Image 1 (cartoon, rainbow, N blue to C red):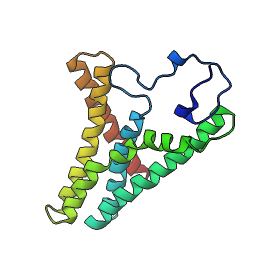
Image 2: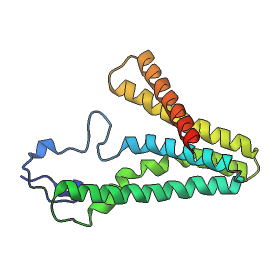
Image 3: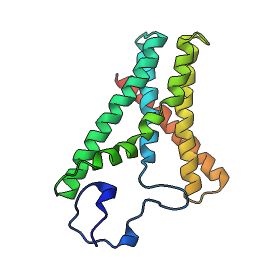
Length: 184
């Protein structure tokens, strides 16, 4: 039996048994969703907010930049994954792969929901531009930290070790944001 190309959208030449093709990897964790896209999305939204804030953008521009940037980067990820899958498969492309990949990459956009909502509240006058940006950045770092904790738990770590891993991931996220701001 060939690999089920409803999952990837490509005809594969290798033979794979049906039991090797699964969309669930462990309890409750779906392989057809890219959790790394959520982590990257959190970093990306923090990066966009930081850059727009430092450039003096008002709250409307901060909110719009965060939201639109995430959509543009999501489209870029979908496109690059489609091309990458096509190269990887080495066979004829099937258009039905596009919605599958788009759903798989959607966590990149979802990662911007809370930070963008916090910026929108600043735009609505609930709090200042500075507070909105700080809350958006803080929520993005908390998301990165949270994914680190989830990774720790999923790997079988003790609660303390999972929290330490999460804090380490959050710290790495902050360091990468600092590095990015130093480069730009």
